Image (cartoon, rainbow over all chains, first blue to last red; front, top):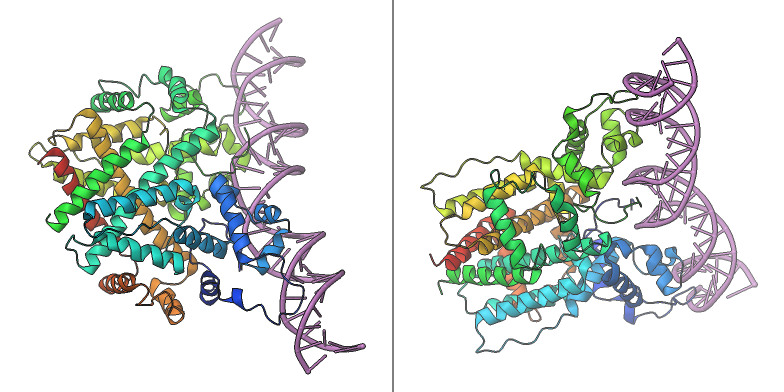
Length: 259
Length: 259
DNA sequence: GAGTACTCTATACAGCGTACAAAGTAATGG
DNA sequence: CCATTACTTTGTACGCTGTATAGAGTACTC
């Protein structure tokens, strides 16, 4: 397998081997294996990788760091997972599987259920910042992915959608949540990495911005931009954007269902 | 300046220098400069970088590649731009500035105007795939960014929104478009890099997926998943997702404006 | 007891952004 | 006119990445 120089994508490895790992087929039958017994497990590798990525994003997730975390040399990891791509598939399925999924109550409105799904996904993304860095295409069809999909489709019961529209609606809601979470995480990361708050950044730029804030050339932009900046403490208020957007999403879906 | 190991972010460099470059302050006054005359211009560097990134994404955009494209050595570029972060700011502002912005007609409905803005941004993202890879926080306040913001705010005239809500609405629409564009570009990239179509990928996985597609364990998921896969040719139909989502977005905004 | 399948380690590679030092060039100040 | 100075351009070097490859040691099967 050639060295992956590009972005991290899901679903990149050998299908059979990846699925075997996802459903943990080999874990129950270590009988009659030659050679030294393995000192670790796939789960231990995945958990170490999750700890690193949760704390420092995909940049912090290097095979060397995972190995060091586990007290082995980097190449040892390759006896547990085929490569980094498959490790990411396992991480993704693991965090999906561990999500909280309180059962929907029969009398609950679809708005309440969809809001719960959105909130849960927002929490997921904010707790695992590496998720938004991942290209999730051809998702690894493990227990976590399937369980999550099954549960979330259930939230749209009562909206009067056919199966295709139901899938579209879920994709739409999840896209909205991921988009907002990404913006929030990006803002956090920039604030951390630049060691400069939004306010400090603004103070450094404002004196130089006569042209950009030219009211005669950009009347709407300068007026609305200032109103927005004044309304929220910083330049970007993620919480507000989420609440505003979710209300729009729900209203848009209501119009679809004719409710 | 330390080597940037992380993701590419906008707004990372020295404010004064970056703004000077964005508004092209030094370009008209090359009088009395000692040393050899420069063989290139900032614009030439930006255009070369754009050509590379448009064709191959952020992975293809290396300082070495830009230099080779221009027939100089990599370090030569650092006399034109302070570093890669500032080059990305210039690229971003440049593509924003070059967007098509047909004037809104007075009798045009807000739905038509917002649809035009969404379409233009979709075209922008699909034509410049590296945009979705960028962390756009603290956007470089150059002419492109300001002109785009000014124009797009105008699309929400007639919806009855105050300034703060107008900014939120625009953020919401742009987030939706970027989210969909990212999904589409990710799907394209994976298809290209894996040299495997979605259909081929599915054919390779399906025989092994008895567990994942277990109808008793995942009744909704297997039924809806199959309906969606059948309805669209591939696993993900970006065009459909965009049209479906944009209709929801507009309906959601209509409910906000009370229209 | 020989063979074998396995685990784990050590070394190596190409490519990244850019710091640093050196070499060459043109305008300036005496 | 020439030494100085500011500038452009180049070459080299560093630490980092995922993982190919080869070798050393271990525990099972025949």
